[in-house]
Length: 279
Image 1 (cartoon, rainbow, N blue to C red):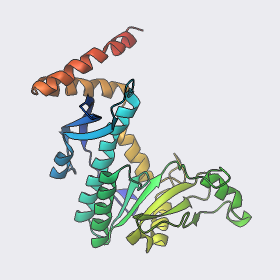
Image 2 (image 1 turned 90 degrees about the vertical axis):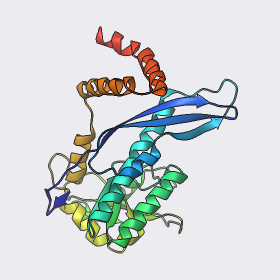
Image 3 (image 1 turned 120 degrees about the horizontal axis):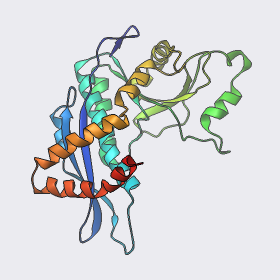
């Protein structure tokens, strides 16, 4: 939490997500189980996401799923947790600006419903909600990235100034946000995509001004310092990963038969780690 560009509060929520492929008679599903470590902002709503099942596809002969596809499903739990935390913050802090790391796009019906719930909760208490993306996959009809295209079209008088461009696309009524592109510091070479909730769009000029005020750190000019700190807090070093792995194994060892099966699977995959440590 920042007031006048100074951090006045900070919280961290930590949890494990274990994803397992579990084929049944008609489809292949990914079963998700969460193990909480430390919570400061996640409430009981997160418990409802536990023991979730995500269908991967209909069963087909010789069909396989690699670790990357399963890991992406597990990573989706973090996005859902972020949305729950943001809704919790909105309800307790009327009138603030909430900046999420990434777009407000949804990766499925459940996530879309959560984004709508967050957007509705924010608008009820006059909270401005946005998502800022470090990179954007939006391209022009000629195949050029939208950021590069806008940089090429910027008038000479604005090359060394902050600027905003909006709306980037004409969103349908089903979309819960508007999309803009922003350059937040005169000396920055970066242009970022910003998704703004429909309520927040009425106050877009104020939002862009607040973002620019928080984007003056020399570590990455033109990028909000709050997101720089959030990235630093969220990163896990190799040393921390080893420590967290020990904690996870301890939690699983104390669990039931289902946890024991997960533990056996993880132990079998640990051979790679053991060989790496011998190098």
